[in-house]
Length: 212
Image 1: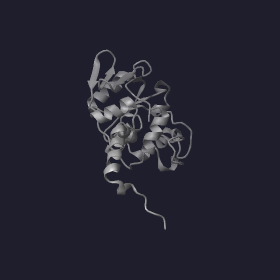
Image 2: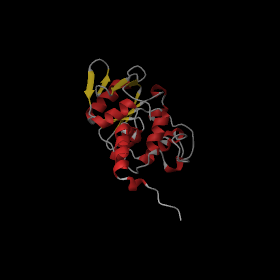
Image 3: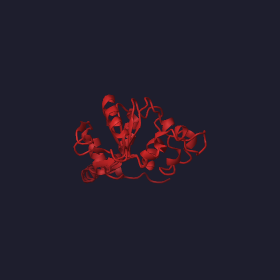
Image 4: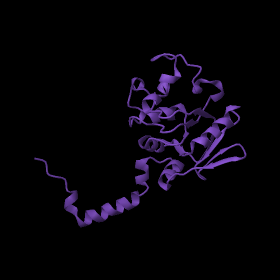
């Protein structure tokens, strides 16, 4: 399971670049284990640091700038998360603290990986993302954005309320902190009942073969 997300009010940072691929999110050289942890240092390593393989922060990169400290929401561009299907990209984002990404479109596999790992992927038109970026730019720490999964709304300030869409299953997974296995286990009672009935009707299916 992951932590449920129903409503999130947080600092948002603009990373409005098209075709941000998973190798940009976490370069392969930064993946040193198969664990979900220990990846945040490699997040956006090619942009975040001044040299390849180094750890000197590049002050021009948005997530290194003090006004965007503790960012939990990213404003992105078209086709966010394209490239390989590596789930490490989402793990690195999550470990860094990102809990929602707002972009005009996502690579489908990346979108699904976000949902399974407790990050809200929100599709909203590019012109609205520019409005959100303009709203936060004056003072990102004060001009925070709210992502409301209950009402399927992005809120900025008093006047900006933008709806977005999630299918029912995706919304339930995020609101209840469920991954794909957890979602299946919601039906555990029905599964157990079927197996019990089937075992009585077809007992030979469940017999283990005798060892030689």
